[in-house]
Image (cartoon, rainbow, N blue to C red; front, top):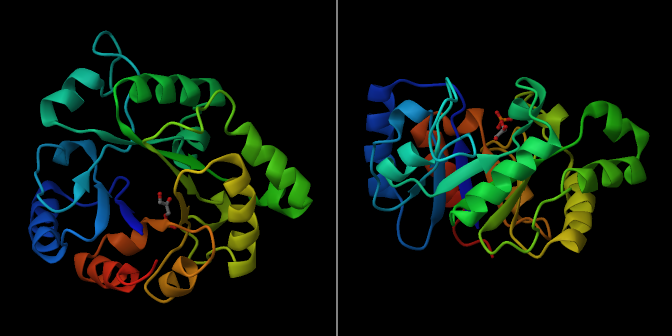
Length: 231
Ligand code: 13P
C-alpha cells in the first residue's frame, strides 16, 4: 500500500520540520509513504519516507518566473512529483498538453510520477461512459507503462469536500483504470481516518493520496497504521 500526503499550500517551515521528525521516527521499512509539502520545505530530509514536489515546470532552468525547475529539484535530491492535480488543471489552467509535456520531461529524468486524474461532478452525473471517456482523455500522450508511474484517481467533486466517492464508485472506476494501466492506482478525495480502511480494501486500490486529513501528523500516523497489514 502506498500512502501519500499532499499538504497543498498549508503549514509553515517550522511545523513541517516538527511533522517530519515525528513521522520519520514512526514510519518503518515496510511502509511506502510519500509526502508532498510546499516547495519551501524541499530541503528537509527524511530517512524512512519519500519527499516530493507538488508541481514543477518541465525545463532544467531558465526564464520561467515563479516556477520551480529541474536544477533546483536536483539540488534538493527530489525525485518524486505530482503531475496533473485537479487544482493545477482547474485553478491554474494546466491543459492536457502541458501535463503530458511535464510527464515526458520528468519521466526522462527518472522521477516517480504521481499522475492525477479525476472527473468533475458534471461528468460524473452523465454516467459511466462519459466518465470513462473523460478519464481516458486525461491519459492522452501519457506513457501508461512508465515504470515509475503511480496513478491517483481523485474525483474533483470529492476533493476537500469531506464526502469521498462511494465504495462502489471507487471500485467501478478503479476496475476501469486497471484496463488502462498495470501501474499502482491510488484513490484520493476526502480520505479520512474513518473511511481509509474501507477504501484500502477495494479491489484495484493500491493506496491513498490524502490532503486535509494528512495535515495533522498524529492523524496521518493513524492512517498509515490502518494501511499496515493490508495487501
Ligand atoms: P482532500 O483529502 O483534502 O480531499 O484532498 C485530496 C487531494 O487533493 C490530494 O491530492
